[in-house]
Every structure is written in C-alpha cells, then in structure tokens.
Amino acid sequence: MSPRCFATVGDSLAAGTGDPSPGYAGPGWPDRVADVLRRIHPDLAYLKTAEAGATASRTARTQLDRLGGFEPDLVNVSCGANDLFRPDPDYAAVEAAMGRVFEFAAGTGAQLTTFTLGRAFVVPGYADWGERVRRVNDITRALAADHGAVLADMWDHPVNDRPDLLSADRIHFAGAGQAVLATEIVKGLARLLAGQEPALRAWR
Image (cartoon, rainbow, N blue to C red; front, side):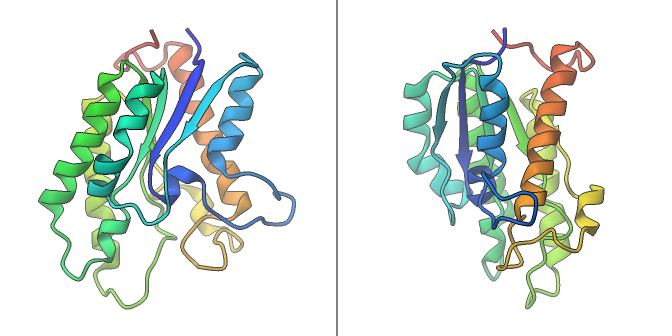
C-alpha cells in the first residue's frame, strides 16, 4: 500500500530548513516528498512536528504525542544533530533518546525513513566535529537497521562537494541539497516498493 499519511519528526533536518538556491527556489525536502506522494494520493495527510533546535530528548518529549494521534503510515525521523553542539556530548543518552523516537515511530506501524548527516556539515570551534558526526551517524544507521527504515546515507554522498550546497548559516542544505534529500528518500521508497530491499517491512 502506498502512503496516505506522511509525518516528519525531529530537528531542522527533519523540517527541511534551508535557503533557496538558484534554480531550486521552493520548499524543503519534506514538502517535495509530500508533493510526490500526492501524485498517487491527492488527499495525502501530512504532519510536520519537526522543529529547529530540537535535541533527541526534546523530540521524544514534545513531538511523539502528536505523531501517535496522526496514525501515520510513513514517518521520517531525523534527530541527534543538535546534541552535538554540547561541550561533551553524552552519546549513550543521545542513543537512548533517539531509540525512544525510532521505537515509538515504528510502533505506529508506519514505514520509517531517515538520513545520516553529510560531511559538509562542519562547525568551526570543535576540533573533533567529524568524529561527533560519525558517532551520531553510526547510531542512526543502527537504529535504521533495527527498525527497517529506508536510510538515505548522506555522509559521503557526492552532493557534499557542491560549492552551493549550504545555506548562509553554513549548516543547512540550501535548495539544491534539499532537492537531493527528497530524491534520495523517493528513490529509497521506490526500491522498497519494487521489492529490492526485502529486509524492510512493507507498508500496511
């Protein structure tokens, strides 16, 4: 069954935050994916609880009630990046909070999708920033595998080399990158529908 109720929970990545870029002025990746899904189901229900600045624990604390009431059949979960801005991230706590979000989302019966963070996401002032991103990406990959999520692995995606990739804040993907994020999710869902990833559960 193709999705009729699409939700995205988490932080600014889940919200599709980013500046327009030439040729790509328009919505972030979740709205782009919703537009594709509406070609199949024009009455698609769409919920975006994601908010900029949300940590994994805040996502678990403030967004899941709305998600449960929505009864989704497709959910994107993206959180954990904001936890990396702490002086000394507690990765065990981050993993536990992310796990609660993934477990709850999977418990709705929905097919899950998620992203890893790209290597273009760099924050000056943290000498170990690359290691921080790699650690949260490892958590995301493990949770995606545990919950049958479609994973768009952006860590070493060629889009990271685009000179116009980032928004003015040098953190979020601009319009061109948002289009790539949407494309990778749609491609992953298409592979799932085609039966090329049998380990992933089918939509109800």
